[in-house]
Length: 279
Image (cartoon, rainbow, N blue to C red; front, side, top):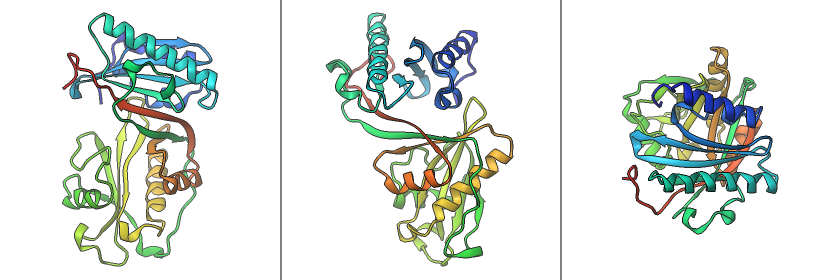
């Protein structure tokens, strides 16, 4: 988590919420402590420059009020372009860009990422219904010690590009499912895993959801996500969110069936520039 936001950053976040009222991603997942500058087109779009000093990144992101409205997407791209160019003018170039899906073609050449990922944002305020698997009571969700070496082993075989690696200090809970078939020696018998991080808003974010390749299709991830989400909401957390690669149709089916609401699709990537925060 970023350093605690100052009064100016809290005011910037409030302005974002006022410009795009009801936007759950801005409300729960945009951390005021990262905000450097913003621009808004109320009711249509907003853009932010967020500074992540710990990883040497200054990122510009655009948000469309309606991510399926081409006019709102274009407005978001225009705002973020203006912010990025202003930063360059004061010696603070951005090192990465995130645009609403469909906005890449609208970016000027100097803001085109070298490579990009397509991802979707989801959120729920309501606990999912209880889930079952073909294994019955043999499949149980358990808490895992942060230092459990099986976490890294499972992520290596099932999700090597996971956003949150084993040992990440931001994780407030590791949860998993032991293999109901009592196999999987390459992961010490761990069949599924996920990490929970806490957002500045107090919401929880699901990360690094992974199922062993030999146990995919057995509803273990569905059970794990459902129980962890229900636990978080029962504990008083206001929302549970997550991000997923857009081409993961299996994950999309799982999250939709658990009651998560799709919020927006985005294209995101680093820029081929060098600045004072680019390492």
